[in-house]
Length: 287
Image (cartoon, rainbow, N blue to C red; front, side):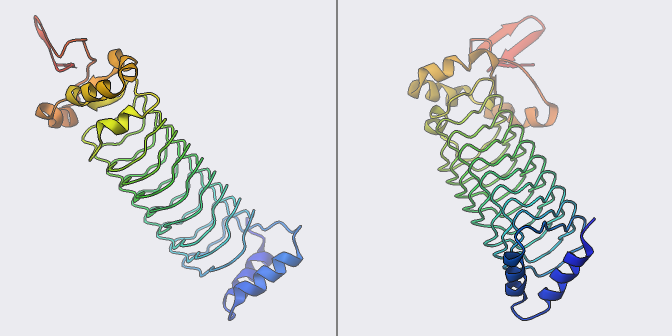
């Protein structure tokens, strides 16, 4: 539970003109005081410019809160509801946002270096041009997220849900996308140099070019790229495709919708077309 005295002090300062300055001065004078605002109800609160560095806000309710230019560096925001929050200019470096709800949050150009975002709900969040270098986004829900121009260098995105995500010109250099779901994601101009795409689901990815995939470190078991596409990748980087062969699920435009609706599964047989009695494999998809 929140420290009642600290919570009252915070709310009192917030109704004053330039109250954030008073709060920040108090924090400067009390550096050893640990801030505990866990489970506090701060719905629609205006906390602009507040210094909450290393504070404990675990389980707090911040729906629609205004956190513009707030210092949240190293803050414990685990399980916090930040849905529709306004976080422009907020510093979230090394913050713990595991299981947090940031759906529809507005936080372009934010500093989220090294942030812990495992299992966080980031659906339709605006993170354009944000710095997520080294952030942990394993199992995060990023459906329809706006990540254009974001720095995701060395980010951990294993099993992340990136369906329909906008990753235009995003920097995914050395990012780990193992098992990530990128159905219909937009990757035009994205940097995939050294990225790990092992087992990633890439059906209907928009504007993905062979030269981008050729820069990846690993594409073993990547799902639903066409044979034509991977042939072009092989021409650019033959050794990469040899590590792909036996575990990759291929798809052609002809039955892409069937795969989506029915869920055909199969592995590349080594030949583009292979027919067997009572079992037919077309472009690597067993039917």
